[in-house]
Image (tube, rainbow, N blue to C red; front, side):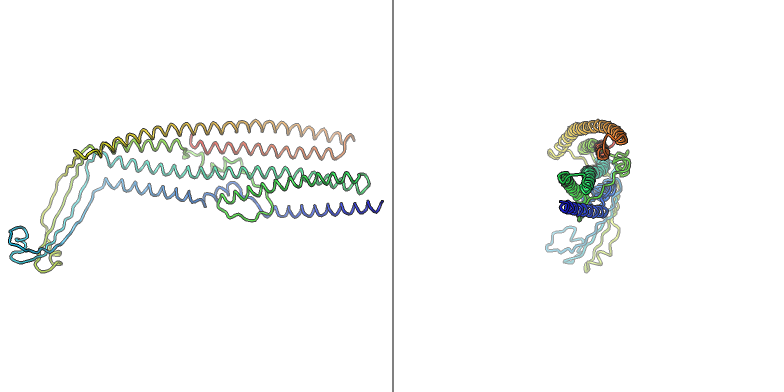
Length: 447
């Protein structure tokens, strides 16, 4: 019987040794697979996201369109030149007859240099310039909202990662407690203080905790892999998890450093308001088509004739006339083009107003919906904090009982494990509060 006990003891010690070696290997692997910080993940996502690059190009295009609109207020200079061969086939007198002077053909050349400046066109150019400037603001808002959308995606995925990491740490704490209990039971069994059934029970509980840790570890790996794909990094081998570093002072601190929630931040309501301003300016542009256009101009023309050569006709030009004057153009009737343009512009303005109301309602609804889970998370945190205080008291009582000999060390270890788990549960609630506050920051913009 003593030989069987010794054999059992040897087997148990071998299993414990192999388990300790596996745990040491896993712990060594943990240090080789660090998770990115929230700041680094956000930076990588913004560097690699093609939507942000497209948004930046949209801002540049809008700025160039402003230059085109501004050029309408500047003078316009045009140079035109042409040359032609004139052949006469009949005897009907005319300009060509005078040019030919008895010849059957001649070469004619003419050119003109004109300078024109618009004095008034019903405010169309000014409306176009104001619209182009407003479009620049819209493009910048669009770019910001693309950044905010990407930041929200990174925030969501990092929140999943942090929650999975905390769940894994809880499972690891509980597994370590069961492993320590198993070692104690195996030690007592070796000294003859415990039965083999107690060892089997302890092994069963340790193995169940190991399975729970394995499940949590897989969830963590999947969350980390999803985050690396989102930020534009190639999924790499993740043999074991490493804790994801929490943002210093919360997510909002990182987001504020990246320009979210700052005075320049915007939201969909401000973007919709910009579109209202553009629509109103477009109405002014359309109505300006009813008014006349007044230009001042100066033009110099030159002409030359040669009976033998194109080039000599062109190079031999002399100044012919000079014109200085005003040009008035007034569209009195163009079918229904102008009236339809005005009607369509008024409809677009009304549409922009209606869209503003819809966007304002939706944003207020989203902010209200985010406020409810934030309030729930804050209440949960208070509950978990009170539970933590009670567990701290329980641990103190348990230690006093141990000194009095009323309980064994196992009860103290259990209380310590429960306290460590409760601290992680409290950290989960705090991280959730930071997450919802960051969601609100991204949704509100500059509200």
